[in-house]
Length: 544
Image 1: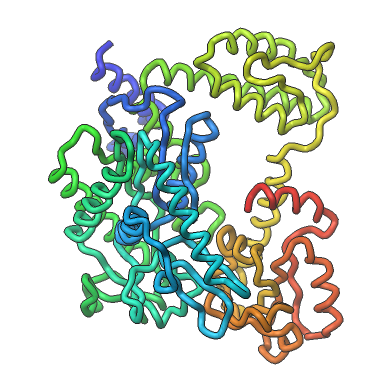
Image 2 (image 1 turned 135 degrees about the vertical axis):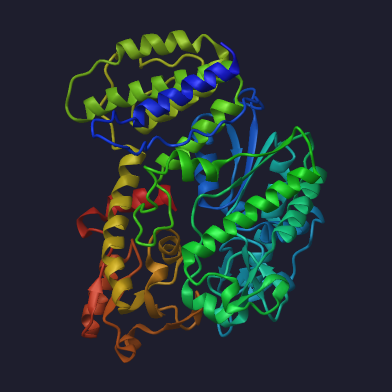
């Protein structure tokens, strides 16, 4: 069977899933999605292929899935989280030159002890010596990225939008704006020509940093990056910093996002046209989601903003298409075996978790046979990891088998997934509550300014709330967090909030009792069930 025939069979298989036999007289719409043709070009030889990924949450999920499958990957959110080519280029320039970061590369929040990095995603330090500690961390991250780029075989670059942040006074591109007062930066629009030049600059820098020949795969994120209307009206500028006429950019966030995606696609095509190479390509992740998954992807994954794709289903589908078209046939066969094996293992474990007496003897026998093939070592590692997380002994990759005399697993403690699911369930419930506050613009105060609050800003709708201020007993050392004042708890009543949200896990009960003694006359909202704090702490350790 040649490649064209195989493609046709795949297309017909997809088509059959969607085809509806007409029974109504007259014309009947056919809703079968378009199946995008991706030429087979193997660049991934085995599990030792090293992936480095740049981009936002969509890119992070894809590379994390590769890691779970046994591939060598690198994606550190602090280094690799960039929405735009402008931000990534500015950062990579400092990496290539080995810049000794100074205070000029930081933003010091007015009236606080908090310093932010201009080049990294939400990298900051607070308290005495914050600047020195932050600079030390930035230099360490720089060395870390260089070391991993030197090993890169495949670099995945996912672009989010063509809109970037520009600090007016410092005259520098900002990687991430949270924590910096909105009045201090402008939201600028890039042209396709500018983005193409930035991609060229990124490619040249990567070529000089990487120790071996690599494949650069450029994609566009299907996520919608729609700026808030108020931010756009107050701060948006045209290309190159010039004035932006109201009619030149849509007022609706989704329309602006669509325009940005179009700019990115034109820019990538221009870049690839100017740099024709077998090691450069555009992978149609965005097109796959918008066309192949048009009947499935509704952009409503746990959010009311209609911007986020379904996780993990949509990224998994795109990654599956990528591996099917870019991995060698023998590797695909191994990955298919890995999928069947892991699914079978999970079915056995799930039955046991519900009290069914299920022997894993058959599983152990099959696993032992597979383990005789050393090329399956990554699969064996995955199996061992899963078993150990469930409290089932696994005696290493060289000979996984149950402990002597045991074909049945011993009593096990809850898995890491169980703990994480507990926390995620609590966060989903909080988001349901938060959506109502967002819709009503309810004034709130958040109690807590530590690491947990940063976690909630990244994983929930907390950042969308009408936050009047943050309250914390550390108000004397931290004056400002995410651009808002940090006040003493006894001043909460003076700000007249309707709700106080406790952003703390370990101290949630203590803070609640303390706020009740203040008798502020406002509603106190906790996030985690008080009888499950121990479970939540374990799950939070896995998620943060």
